Image (cartoon, rainbow, N blue to C red; front, top):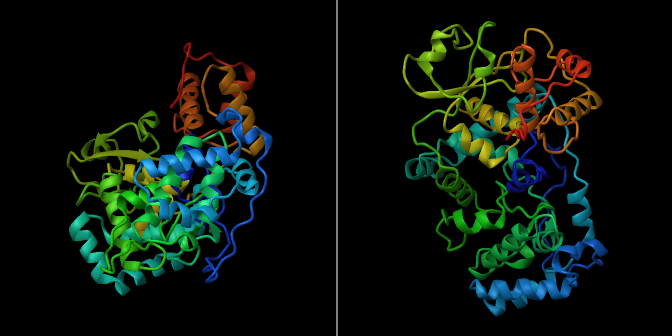
Amino acid sequence: MPMNCLGSRLAVATIAASFALALPASAQFAPPPAKPAAPKATAPSPRAASCHNGASFDRFLADVKSQAVAAGVSQLTIAEASPYLVYDQGIVNRDRGQRVFGQLFTEFAGRMAAPYRMQNGQQHIKQHAAAFARAEKEYGVPPAVIAAFWGLESDFGANMGNLPTLKSLVSLAYDCRRSEMFVNETIAALKIIDRGDLTPDEMIGSWAGELGQTQFLPVHYVNYAVDYDGDGRRDLLRSEDDVIGSTANYIANGLKWRRGEPWLEEIKVPQNLPWDQTDLTVQLPRSKWGQLGVTYPDGRPLPNDNLPSSILLPMGRFGPAFMAYANFAAYTEWNNSLIYSTTAGYLATRIAGAPPMRKPATPVAQLPFNELKQLQQLLVQAGFNVGKVDGVLGQQSRAAVKAMQIKYGLPADSWPTAELLARMRGGTAQAQPGATIR
């Protein structure tokens, strides 16, 4: 990302239990100098090595290099990369201190899926028509889907980050929270160098280690990047053709895209819909949703077929409503934030020609941060696992809210309300022993 935590595979790992988004970074990609000075190391904090039995960073790094050699990385690559494999406490501090926040979907989508980004996506599809057509033929991924991720992740290459990737990866690897993950990412980055795709000084990206115009973590770069322009390199920083082909490959084979099937459509829901069925975990045939009164926004009936689909209400029953199909799982796998994944899917529909979504008839009330945090605390007291009590409406919190709405006889649309909070303040109901919402 830069868009720093936006759409990254790291965001999935870091906030998998949180449907929250970090603000896009404003840093622009800046090419490195021809002969960059070796990055300056900063001393690791005392707690940084607590998961490594107290091993120093140098000792830890020596072990990572040994693992890389065992994985097939050449000694020459290790030597070339070594000046960049330095510890930066600032990266770790930034990762530990990253703030996620709750935001209304309509606000986020209004900014990130704005008309200019839709138009840019359409323009890029025309400009690179041959590569997009080839990608759709080979991988089955529509151009609009690729273009939407491309636009959200880096504004088509304008915002890829400006920090040394190797330094970020090895610093996060030495930190104890996701050490194994980032050791693997560090080794993957060395493999990218080893096979000649990028040089160490070219590896410039986000502080979290993602690379390229659609912000691949190195493991995904190794596994899914393809040489679409035929120059012998997989260059996701500068080659638009490589970006298009590689992104299609990842969506198709990494995220299991279903060729020829839809991903998201706006719908209109009746006020007597069984709200407890409006959940991504509930799939019904489109014909069944039609029988329940669900239509397209203009009142047209849904197709009378058996295509499995779910109702997605990112802001509850009074907000926008979408029909989510099996392919929408690719979006939640790309980034587990409901706000991001829904925005990405919606932007793709706009690039493909869909009209803008309807505005809610009345403003949708959102609990203030402190009240949402209190609601989470009450849910924990009721026996639910909501993940981190942080005032952010994450996946676990939404599922717990739905369970308590059902218990209190409220419309179970997973959206926290002042009424639910008042009910829970008046007497916390107990969940089943050991209840865990996932």
